[in-house]
Image (spheres, rainbow, N blue to C red):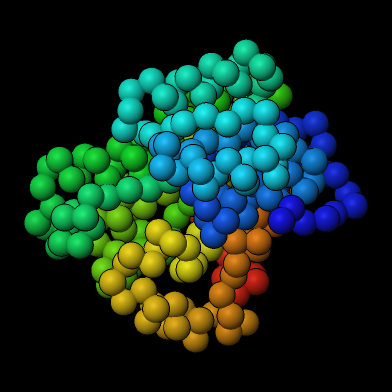
Length: 260
């Protein structure tokens, strides 16, 4: 379940991974790679229903900190960072791999999105990254890395992506501003865009299978990346050798890793 590697490049590093739902989650691909390279991980689960799926993965990661985090529940995010502060006193990286839009907002036209649907989408999908960055900053005394997950529906219209494309555009802009503000402290900030992946969450998007085939045909290697590919890329970026790479979207397409 956890890949075997000889070089423990992240030995001694401490990280928080938010967004693991099951073994097909992008966040799980990242967590498995971080652990393989020696990092200690704190992980979260959405709610009691999700806990039964996340607990076995947390055990595989040997995570000493496993806590609930529903971005819509006041205080849960702060509780996670308080626990990390108490037990570790530092953080080297954070993976923000959460997004959400109510069904009415996601499946309807952007111009028809009600205010409450828009605010919920932006709250979970964008603002939470800003809040995590704010909470992580004092724990990254010697620098660190912040990751979030995006999609090219932020830069062009993708059928059925709708209001989430608007949220991802805001998220990518947030990455640039946070990078400018925290970069002088040695904190790197990345938005990772792996293209369409067959996660369970994505399977709920109408005509998602057609989107996968279309993306595969356009990919340079005529194949799509896996969560393991995303994990390998984030693990490299969390290593000190990657400290000069920062501040914009990183596209991972068909095995090619490109800083845009």
